[in-house]
Each structure stands twice: as C-alpha cells, then as structure tokens.
Image (cartoon, rainbow, N blue to C red; front, top):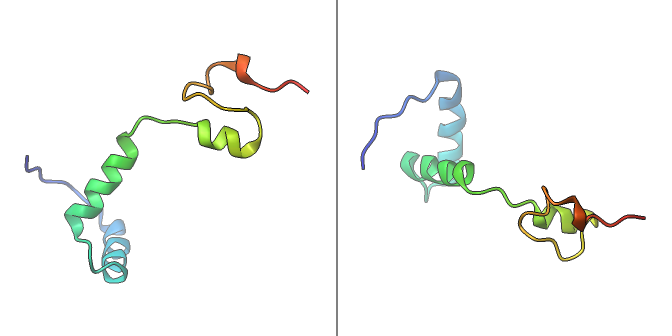
Length: 71
C-alpha cells in the first residue's frame, strides 16, 4: 500500500543527517521502522527484570502488582 506522508520542515534536516549516517537506509525504511516501533505492543517485562522489581516477569507484569517483590 502506498501512502503520502507529511514530514514537518523541522524534521527534514534530522532525517537527511540520519540518511547520510546510514546510507543503507532510505526515507521509506526509516518511516517503516519508526512505525513498527511505535505500533508494537508494549512489553515492560525486560525493564522490570532489569530493575530487579519482578522475578521472572510476565508480559503483563506492569498491570499485575501480584508479581511485585515486597521487601
């Protein structure tokens, strides 16, 4: 599917610089990656595990306080 997107003037220099730094990419690939990141389901389990808040976190640990470690 093709779409026409508006990119604000203030983002164009940043996009141009990014494309210079990453010549293997193009405008379409950057937008596709950004959309994939923005639209993916959020999973805080890795962050919770890293912070030591939850042991063996489930993907829904952010909303299930039963999994919190009480000290």
